[in-house]
Length: 419
Figure 1 (cartoon, rainbow, N blue to C red):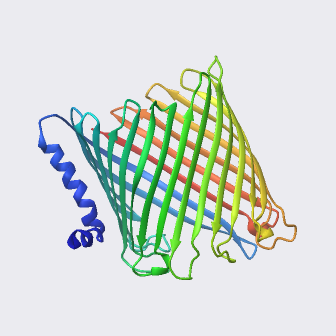
Figure 2 (figure 1 turned 30 degrees about the vertical axis):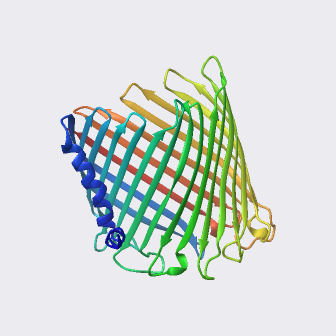
Figure 3 (figure 1 turned 45 degrees about the horizontal axis):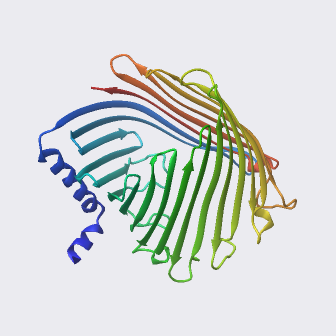
């Protein structure tokens, strides 16, 4: 047993176990197997603009890369397994992703799911990443589910995560995380369901024990759709207990309530409220209590069978009992469209203008600003089983104090050929 625990302390070893199990499933019985391959040519750009001593400054990272992917999928009745590999070589980094998944059903009422991933990243010598640090990350998940009746299920779930850095710094440190818990689900369909979950976990950071913690997680989600009306409730709570006095233990709770109405012509109108509450046992000037509240209304109007436009006004407030400088209100409005043309074109565009107003007039930490967020995502099918993918976002902030002006621009574009 001790040897098994020690094996989990090494990311590569932890990921190998589900990989081997998936391979065994692939070879265990005759079934249908499918092999897919792909090659990708891509370009990523990250530009961070800010002001230092009244001079405009920017940091930029541009990466051109070539990627190779392979996937092996197997299915035999209710048994499924898959192995996926993606290798990416660029002028800034070298990445290797290895994923495995498997699913078996020993009986009609019981199922077993396994997932695992191994990610290795290397930063090229002379890369533009100022704090580049090679690392290996491993993740593994197991879920055992059993039916309690025609419309209810109980699942045991376990999760493991490990990160190993080449060099130990004040920001990069190795850790091992594991948790396990139970989920109870009721409902035959996604539009009428109830989910209650609880889990306990622990993180061990050998090089900085002050960041090790024990964790308790709780989750509640319910959805009810009586006719054209849909009601969705979701709440998530996270309790973290830190040892020592360096960092305070805390509660974090995120909740939302949404009601939607669908009209006969396909238009949808939604009203949503969101809350994020953060509470520390020992608040100080670094870790302090906050409560963020936001309300939004969305109207989505159809343009065709799979296309629509929408408008979404938003109003949010940040509350903070101890520090006036942290309090603000924010008003914005998202305008967007989603366009789909069969399997050949998918495009999503959004634009969000807004204004954030800090409540404290003599605020020396933050200044009021106008925001303009632009986002573009799309995919276009090309000849010879090729696909052109695009993601771009631009988020400029124009502050009342010029030296606080700030913007981030991300662009990712790739051409993928499958065969």
